[in-house]
Image (cartoon, rainbow, N blue to C red):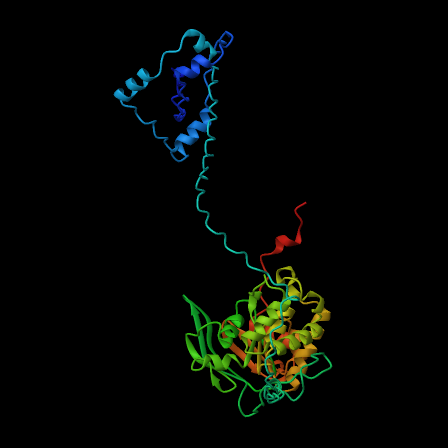
Length: 442
């Protein structure tokens, strides 16, 4: 009878292993077999608990697919098992000891399938925009040359004709004292350059100008003289259109100032009293402003600015602000501005005041040349000698009224102009009552 070896207990975590049944031995074979020497059965070493890799098991439990399940051994019915035990005789202790101990088959655990490492799903990265490829112009393939279109030849522009400045007989390239000054309009000797009739102006109860009548032919150097407060500046301001008259008419070269002021003012150049101007500009800028304001082109303004600056000795001062000029320099600059458009009539209020003798001589030469070519100058002055020397017409105004007018010879008679002026203006006054000036306080 054969002893059944006990089946090793399966580890709960290991798959079940099927052990094949041992071969049976009959009684005759057992009797015939020589007795085996008694051997001591070695004690079974205690089994060490098998450590399972926690990480692998955890990964296998989570990520690995389920291990294949080995079917359990077939169940032997109880009747078959009893019959099998009756057939085989029990083995005595010796026979049992003679049985070669069968070592427990070492169960090699099947290698666990490596867990499939499912890579963590990376976040979808938006594709970066492809950088613009900067093509080197040298390496860029040259495009195929298009058929060259031969443009039609443009007509050659006709040369621009620069009109001469206002029908001037001579160019104003050099406005020097030795070069004549041209006018921009032909002079009609039959039409007076200035005609004033019944001019009146009052300030409150004060009658500044009272029925002034003047007739000045073209080509005349005309002076207006009178004491302080006589109405000279007020009269010239109304003639220039700077002040509106209460009554009377003013005609410039036959043009009514009240009816057509723009056209009449184009015929005049004005040097006003008190020198009100844009003194934050440079001299060059101010002359350019005067020229453009009169309708001249920029190129013509530049040319005439250079000529006037040279004539009035202002070339080195054109780049400075007018506020840095002396009174005499400012007067010369504004006189140049009054002449830049070559007018028919110059209306000048005290042009020689605060001007040095050298500059006065230059100004007189320029104005004399201007008058010699048909221009008309009307100026006010307190210098009787100057008026008598340069003017060919004069009017004496006292208390807003013209007391004498005509040529210089007609007004002065047998006396000097100063004597005649003192006579008309009542210059000989009584000096009584000032005897205290004949003694001194110390």
